[in-house]
Image 1: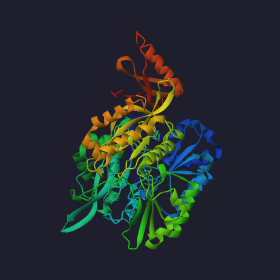
Image 2: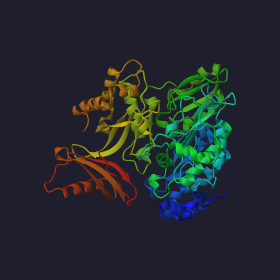
Image 3: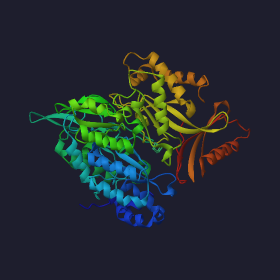
Image 4: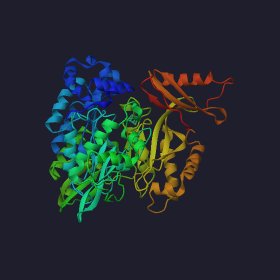
Length: 540
Length: 67
Ligand code: SF4
């Protein structure tokens, strides 16, 4: 269905918008075979940014011509065949590495343009695609990694997610949105989807309609992190499962047609939502689709997408096993082992979670022990320690053009060190990012670490971190707050150990870091950090 | 070329923001220090200088908020 780009004659349009009017982002897919035949040098510089629509970004330094590729994994559900294909790509082209993202997608690095057609072929053969994983388009759909097996889900969302995903894949009606567009669809009552930080989220809810309780969804709109984080706001509507696609089409159409295109920095849906507010947005939505008012929400808490250990499925006699992938990075041997193990003990499926970890579903109860005795789980732990198990990291300086510091390996080392130095009965969600952007979701961490570069006392340029505390998406959802003071990278382990030792001493039994932060307050945490820094442990 | 955003702490805890364009981080640090030097009659001591953000394009800028 063609549509009119009513903004085409708008006087003030960003230069990216003008370029998108000349060429649709998806057109790059037609050009890639030519570039692949003729090499990186045949790609005009102006075309580089269009590769995002194909799920491809140039790594740093861009001129070297290596791409990062992100592959959509809607709701995190992968078949055995798909995982095997991903393992093969990592092995043949990706220098043996595959990263799980904080949106359940996966990423390869070090790809060259000549290799892309073969990678596309391999992905397509198993029903995977990188198209739309980046760019001003609907990104991979975040969902419940336990969809269909979850005793805590209101309904099975797998078909709904697939339906929405396939409708929007390569759909030229929605390939020119004002900006990136992130959605989540989940009926997990523990908000495994991080609903509040998506542009559009469907969360579990019920409503009595004609005397019958109907299971469906509430709708949140306008969330996002980045430089100006904003929590999504609920609309006053109830959506039946069979209406999810139509509501997604309606909200996406509103974003496409009313979203801001003058300034790229104000183009995310959150800016429109901030101006309109939920009432006006609900009213506008009603022009597209008739929906009843809100029912009763069924979100009961927030688990941040963590599912460690062995758990009962809704299917009797079956278990799912959640294991930790340190900072989301898997190597080829581990991937092939996962392919074998999930096939041997389960039905071959493996699922990714937005905490950058994995879940292996459908293991018969009597097979669990044997499976956990596999060597792989000495590294991918089903019961990880409290720091490594909850450590999240963005890509960092290794591949990212904007990064100021190294993050992935460092986060792993810091978590390892903390686990050795301290034991806590509550997890601490540590997120590390290499710049003020939000790829590692620093804003929702218990403790967020944001990289900077500084000159230390000896006038040497060193990597360092700012520290943020108190983020959560639980009932009292809030982004974390910055503490004053910087920690030189070399001092990070020591400062964090001391900081968390104080938490350990002062916390009540079972108290989470967020509850502690709320109880003692930011000034107290600032004093604690000041004292540690003043003892010359860190540079301040 | 990229744009680099700095914060520096000078004498008496005075905090200043500096934005420079440069080819690389080390050059950006150097240029930021030079910008500080030429902005004060009495040469201040730079106690601390931090690179907080970089933007790949030299077109554009940063909003300098209180830190
Ligand atoms: S948060 Fe910054 S450093 Fe990390 S991957 Fe994103 S842009 Fe790069």
